[in-house]
Length: 415
Image (tube, rainbow, N blue to C red; front, side, top):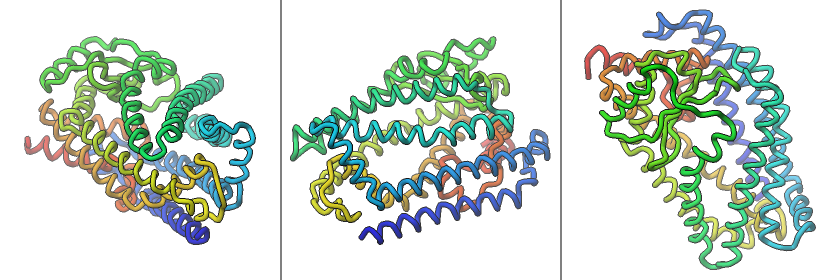
C-alpha cells in the first residue's frame, strides 16, 4: 500500500508539472500577440515584461514545489513522521498538548524552510520587475508577526479540537464541525478590526468624490456597507487590488492605494460593483453553505478513518498519535480531492461571470469594468495567454481576455 500511495502521489505531482509546462509553452508561443480590445492599453513592451515576469515567478514556484514535495515524501514515506511523532510524545504525555505542539512546531519548521524562497521571490523576482517596495525589516516583522498570530490562533483552535475529541469519543465529529463553523464566522467578524490592522493602515478614502460615487452605486444595489477604506498596500508592493472584508454589519470595502492611483473613478466603481455582485447573487452565502456541508461530511469521514486501526499501516507504520494520523488523513484527502479541482474552478468562474454581468447592469457601464480589468492585468503583469486546459483546471477567475471580450460585447449591444 505505501508503494501504491507513493505512485499515486507521484503521478498527481507529475500531472501538475505537465500542466505548468504546457501553460508556459502556450504563453511563450502567443505572448507577443496583443489580444483584441487591448490594443490601445497594452504595448508590445508590456507583453515582453509579462512573459519574463511570468516565466521567472513560475520557475521559482516550480523549485519551491519540488523542494516541498521532496520533503513531504521523506516525511511521510521515509520514517520521519513516526520519528517526529516520538519526539513530540517525549515532551508531554497530555494528548491535547501533544496535538497542539505537533502542528505548531511543524508550522514553524515550514516557515523556516520557506524563508529562502520568500526572500528570493520578494527581493529578487518582485524587485527585478518593479513590484517590491518592502524593506527587509518590514519583511522580517511581517514574518514574525504572522507566525506569532497564526500560532496563537492555531493553538486555541487545535486545543479546542483535541479537547472535544478527548471529551466526546463517540460524537466528536459533530462537536468539532460545529465549533469550527462558529469559529470561522467569528474570525470573519473580528478580522477587519483586530487582525488586518496589525499589518496595514486603514483610513477613509481620501480621493475627492470617490466615496460618494461608491455609496451611490451601493444604494442603487441595495447594499449597506459600514465603511469604504483605503489600505497602504504600496508599502509592500505595487500590485493592486480591492476586496470586501467582514460579514454582516461589520463588512466593509477596502481599496489598495495603488488601485486608486491607477484607475479612474468609474473603473473603481465598476470593480467594486463586481464584488457587490457576489453578495447580491448569493455567491458568498452559497459558498459558505457548501463549505460547511463538505466540512460536516469530512468530519464524519475523518471520525471513521481515525477510528480505523489500519490507517497508519497504509504508509507502513505501526501505532501513531492522533495528530500523526491526522497528517496521514490529510495526505489521503488531498489525493482524493485533486480530481475535483476542475469542478471547483468551474463553479468559481461561473460566479465571476455572474458578478461581471451584475456590475455591468448596475453601473450601466460595462466598458469601465473592461478597462479596469485590462489595467489590473497589465499593471500586475498577469498572463494574458494561459493554456485553455490549464485555465479550465486551475483558474478560479475566467481568463481576463475572455472577460473583457464579453464585457465589450455587452457594451456594443447594450445587453
